[in-house]
Amino acid sequence: MTILNKSIFKILQILIYLFPLSFIFGNLAINIFILLISSLGILYYNKSLLFWSNKKILFLTLSFFFILIISTYNQVVFENYYKDSIKSLLFLRYLFLLLVIKTMVAKNDIKISYFFFVCLVISLGISIDIVIQFIFNKNLIGLYPIEFDRGYGQNLKYFTGIFGKELIAGGFIQMFSILGIFSIFLLSKPEKKIIKYLIFFLLVVLFLFSISLTGNRMPLIMFMFFLIISALIIRVDNKKSYFLATSLVVFLVVTLISLKSDLFIKRWINFYTGIPNPNIIINEFKKEYPELKKYENSGKQFHNLEEFKDVKTYKNYPFYTGHLSIYLTSLDLFADKPILGRGIKSFRNNCTQKIHLPNRTCENHPHNFTLEILNDMGTIGFFSLFMLVVYLLIVNYKEYKLGGRKITKISNWVYLTTILALFIQLVPFKSSGSFFSTYNAAYTFLIIGFLIGLDELRYIKQKDKDNS
Image 1: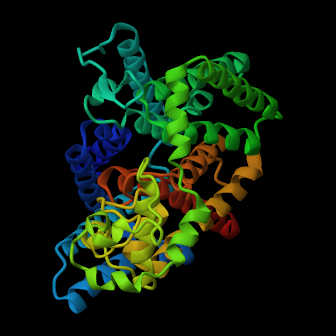
Image 2: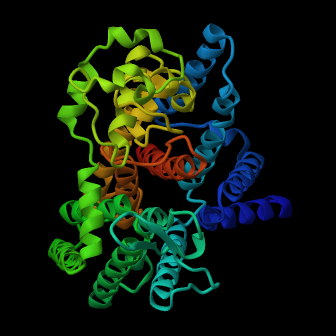
């Protein structure tokens, strides 16, 4: 290996280990990291990036990106113009990121435990910074919490730490703490089991507390869901009881704290009230409004129409968090083009077609990964990703269950971490940001890259064993 190749390889490793840091500094930093990782990966591995042992995963992965481009440029052909069409091509940067991660894992060129430990350190640092902001009313760099008047008779404080005015701290901690929290079992000495479990418990408490301070309720729910799922599937020296007990104790502590805070209760009541009722969604989605057809594509909103005054004919539901009307609008758009969808980021470009109907609205995206993918790529695109994710979860979970009998000799904690991280990221019922955003896409395809790499490593090891 030449000095240049060695340098490229070392820089590539460092970039991947430090990749979680880019999520703190925003989309520009994330894209710079992706560009550097992809470029150096192509320089170092060349044709090796294109080698896939498992053709099923290759087909499903390429199908997803191919369908995204086809569904988008289908709008260009039949609608003559689509302003976001170039974004489907730029989205291929996540394919290159996935390829590099997959290849490095398959070749054992990256210590996954180091990456997870960086995730732990960063999420721990963000959490401590938020707790400091809670105690002293400003964080380590002098930023104050964000206050909003939510109509409860007092202002609500969101402790955002280093993220300032962006309300994403809870999501960040949830995502990267899940990747990092099990790294304490990878890096610490095996004989110090009690200390490891104690540290794990303290970390869980800290992450839950800091996420609750951020005011981001869905990340808090997802982190608690992560604890429950991990406690149910974990297989570590018959210590399942430790994790079950941890989840139960933490759940009880969080519940008791919540019941002691009137403000906290009001926030969760508002959250619960705003959860869309599936029956209402189904009933409203089935309704037809032929008399309102004349307003289609007019850009006029229903509450500005004369028909809005006829409360007997039209049921107008409270807006609350807005998810009911967003989901209905998304379902309407999907029903119009259910096979291929309308192309990347199509919701914001087409939602005005439906706002003449009751209980519809416009936003940048549907606030749900499943609905967004169905809107943008139709059922074909959705099932290509769904089948890829399910396949990866199943094959890697089977490896995880083998324990010490795994041919890859990769720690069970690595499998458990990546499986849970992807599962929690793509839970279909949660409200979320945009799947196609830089933040979510980079995180999602990073994890998928790890899981594909682990499966490739299994194929390679098995082939070597069969040939020996």
